[in-house]
Structure formats: structure tokens, C-alpha cells
Length: 353
Ligand SMILES: [Zn+2]
Image (cartoon, rainbow, N blue to C red; front, side, top):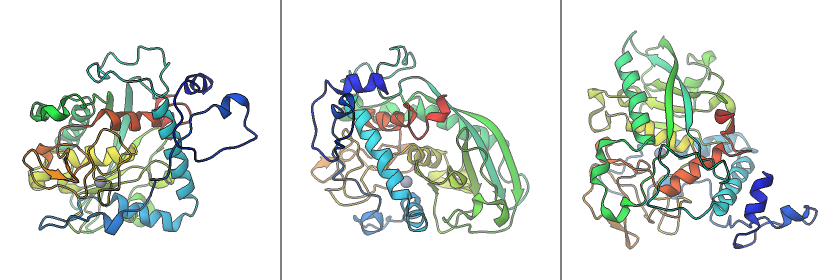
């Protein structure tokens, strides 16, 4: 933290939001963060650009609204995480877009406030299947492999990234290791998105040590929903992501969503990424500077350029709603946002301690 404050003192001041007169000198020199655009709710249920395809594929914002209602302290917690994230990103040294954050990263001795080292996330898969063995080991292994591809920028689709976005592609340098599989059967066909599957008392699985494991629940969600995640700051007992059985790993039953990228999208939320269109109209942001503004989700496999809000949508980003084989990048700005969670005091710091 102390190192951070020295770095911060050298940076430009953004719009003032909060000031505490009692802070010591070095804290008083801290960069000021503009939180004026921060929101925890989707506008118009998240989808303003209606189309024939405008189904809500991911219920993370719906689940967040549900959790905010149940837990009055959650909004403040998430505000604080956002504030810390913005402060760390503002303090980050100017990045060399061509240099990227490759696998050799992490060698700069931790002088950068956003955590730069390699991160490994052990994964517990909590399966609730309708028949024993419905979710195969091959499916599980393929899901871990796909997460590893996407978070190390080795998705074969990257060759299709248009030149406009080519220098914004991030090697997130996060890897995933299968640490355990829990299985039980239950014939329920629609577990919904209010976390019933995360409770053994409800017939699901209790989370395993969420400070040290990413819990992935695999079950029938119902309603055509592919998955949902809990953002950082939520209750430990429900921390993790939920993926519909058909959309977990490589699975022909998932059709255009059968290549494991629902988990990539949901783990993006678990690492504090918002939908790329900001869950609202053109003036709503995803809190990432290098992703273009949009007012809607994109579906299927859009042609480039797809223009909304007077700029080309980054439709191939994992945080849009396109089909699995048409999403193949996180941006450098998203990378910083995720990595801020692993810095000292960050919401996911326990994974690198
Ligand atoms: Zn989502």
C-alpha cells in the first residue's frame, strides 16, 4: 500500500469525490477518483436494444439486484471495491499497448499497483445432474482447457480480431486448475437464478472455501439462461459462477453456446467485469476505458463493423452475448480491472497470497 501512495502522488488529479481531513499527508495526496457514473443496476432490465434475439442470456445483473435487495450492506461493499479498482487503475503506469502483459509478465518487482504476476485459480466443480454421469469428465476437462485458453489469449479465434482492436487484446495471464468435482443427482429442471443450487440444505452443494477456490455450479438453470455469476463483494456462501448443464464445456447439446464460453463470460463477472454495453443506453459504461460504448448486447456472429452509439462495437469481446465461437478477446482495460482485485487489499487477493 505504501509503495502505492508514493506512485499516486505523481499522478494527475481526477474529479474530486471524497475527502477525509483527518488523513495523514501521504493519504491526502492520493489520487481522487470519479465515481459519478457508478451504478449497480441494469437500465431497463439490461437490454435496451431489443431485437428478435434479445433474450437475457446471463442473469448476473438480475442476481445482483436480488442480492442487493436481500443485503443492504452489499452496495457499500461493491462501491468500495469499485473505488479501489479505479484508484489502482488510475495509478497504473502508462501501459505500452504493443508490449502487452505476456507470460513473462510479473517481472517488474511489483512496482505497479495493479497486480502483474501470474495468477492460478483452483476450481471446484459442483455438479447437480439429472442422471449420474450426465456431465462427463471430458466436459469438465474441456471447460478448464477453454478457460485457460481464453484467459491466456490462446483462443484460436484471435486471428479474426479486426485491426481496430488488435492492439487492445490482453493476455490476462490467469490459469485455472481443476481442484475437485462434487456430484449429486436431482431431477429438478429449473433451479432458477436465486442461488438455490448453492445450498446443500436445498438439495444443492454448499460452496467450498470461496476465498481459495472458484466454485462452479453446473445444473439446469431453466428459462433459456446460460449462466450467471456473483460479482466480487457478495456473500462468501454464494460466491462463484453457475453454468447451465448444456453450456458447460464442449457439449453438442449447447449448440452455438456449446463451446464453453459461458464460463469465460461468467468468470469475467466473477472478476468484476460488466457487460460490454454497460447494461444500459449509450451513456452507460462498463467502467472500462478501452471498450467502445454501446447500447445493447450483440447476438449470434455479428459482421464487422457493427455500429452502435457512433462507434464500432467490440462484439468479439467475451463480455458481449455473441455465440461461443465468435468471442475471443478481453481488452487491456478489462485486464487491469480484473487484476486490481489481486492487489493488496483487493477482493480476490487471497488467491495470490
Ligand atoms: Zn453476463
